[in-house]
Image 1 (cartoon, rainbow, N blue to C red):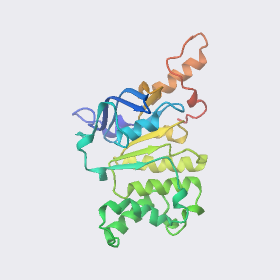
Image 2: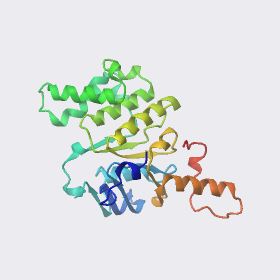
Image 3: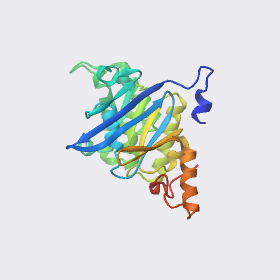
Image 4: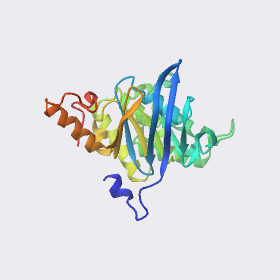
Length: 267
């Protein structure tokens, strides 16, 4: 079910939960993002696509205030980023790195998502424990709560990190390359988990190098190339443009370079 079916109202399209206007970022004095304007609306699933070095991860970090922007503005839930304080509304899953978590148990990693709600040295409350249990159930890992992270597959580890972000029941979930290094079977499980969250009203912004099983979840695709937005629209239009170019060799110059989509779109 697409965004238009899930959220159509007489009042018009849903309000954005995340919006960037003319956002530019430099790293080491070099431009990485060049005038990015984009948004994620309430209940929408947006894929941020592009090849290596296109600026996807940098954009996500700038949108969340993790790195400074040289120009432009960002709003979260209608509030300027510099004034935003309701971070429990936002769940962030960075690129998977569990090196420091190898000896930790699954439930400990997930429970760390609730630390901002607890006073130092105070045991977890019943509400905290319930939030952890609910998050593990959402990703289908309630039976692995006492397992060590090192004993899980890459796909299961990724689901644990998603569960950690879900402990605060965020209204916006941002994921950076959640399928990287994850086999096809676990990518499908991730797609099912995210689809259920979106169906429940959670807005999702997900960084992908290719779509894979997550293609059926996406309402809209934003494609970056060399730090600029080169496509922002319906995923079907993007795929059709790509297939049209590859099926008609007389087109001298493609509108978009979508080689990273080859063989990965599942509709």
